[in-house]
Length: 380
Image (cartoon, rainbow, N blue to C red):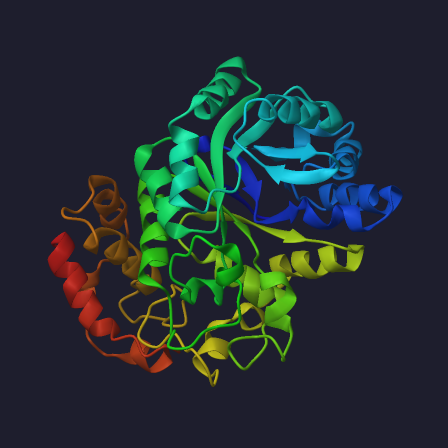
């Protein structure tokens, strides 16, 4: 298992994580076994947004005796009222739901205290402008949460959270289908099979990933498989299907992404996700699939996939492109990005304009031109 640092939290999280949403589908013994099995294989981050007692009990029992090995995303504002899940900022319900989470997880803290599920501007304003956020801060001060996070499907909300400095990390929905969608406050519209006129990475989502990378705000990923739609020929928006390894690799090649949290019904599904760690570059390659798809290709956009290798000047083209994208959207080049770029062994100015990389790029990116722009931007 490979591990990545989750932004500025300092936490090292497994590239493959555990999304706990489906645990309540099965009997307790089966689901507890899934959590334990995942932990034995090196998965160390798990998300618990569910308010129902069964899911929380399962995760608590699955982590029992190994709590120190797990990094927990526990949500603040996911409540259970009259036997139903209710998202709320009402302080008559929020504290008791969080204390219930700690009790059922058999722990006295969660590593990542998540501002739960904010997709609408009105809800964001309600979170940051009331006693709800004061409660979140108090949880951090008391040590009941170690870091503050946010879960959202809306890049516009995520950008605000990253810019304000309120959060250390974000749980965001990332897959190549959703990445084409513009910022939407209604999750039902977001997941609707409507891709008319859409093509490639939505600019606001690209900005979010770059902003998080610049600010040190780590991203953990939900919905990497798009609820299985990307495996289904009848539902994929691309006209072709992807594999788990390709979906995971797509998410992990977004800037700032540290871990991809998949949902599991069986041990075999955990094995399928973890097969990513030993997969060949060909097995992980999503770019060739998307580039040849009959619908919605990412033409002209660098996805940092690395197909441009090898470079006769030994330039790490994908990384240079990444730093260019991070810097070029800012009024001034951020000093942190500049220093990372300057630390590279080879720079864009060393490009010999052979264009061999362009012949290998699945998306037709004009790499030689980007190298010239990068050299001008950074001065080397």
